[in-house]
Length: 313
Image (cartoon, rainbow, N blue to C red; front, side, top):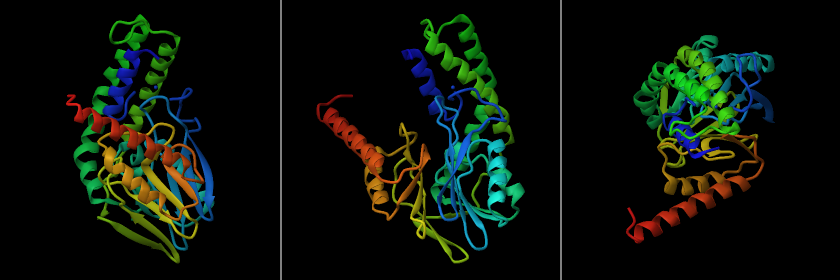
């Protein structure tokens, strides 16, 4: 992939949303794999994306009197399919939705859950609710307004066979452009349908929700991917949903706190969890990958400190 393509995709990431995914996509396609990760605990693992049009993983925790869902993904169409899958597993209603953070690829399916389960309560940290109001809502408005023009620009560049800096697109670059256009065309009508994703209830440090006898612990361990990341732990199954504190294969950093992220991940690894569901990527059964991320962040911090000490700008 040439440098101009990388720059454009980075710009798309920094506007969080529009930009190419593995394979072609259509509303009828398979966008997640449902995985049983514990007794009465199911993860919905989204397929890996090669573009900035992504959807986060979700988790459903089934209790005695209701269901708690962690994150609802980026696409209402996908959320409706998730609802159907949950209903096939249990007749119990979804009573709670927990947002791990404010990024739109984790919460745009809320409206479908609110319609399917009137009275569902959406929970997040106070910081996350504030960011949804002042960042996510305007961000999605911009994506919807400017997305068609962005897709058209990519079409023109694809037809010309040139990147934004005038360099020729190679075969890999053309494939990236084609996937980007397809992803944007799929995402825009999904974004227009998204609604109801502002949380109803907030907490600062911890919150325990009881689904009958089943306990679900929601915690803010410290700043990392955002200043309000929530992790959701199911003690009786030793399952933890991390949100984007953990993302595989490439950590996401958007409005992040790399130095503090290190300590937050150490607190996360201290939890008695046997199964880790990341914000993106496959289910893990050990902390090996997270240790790699910690080492990466430590190295980055050390290099920045050395550069500052040398007086570099």
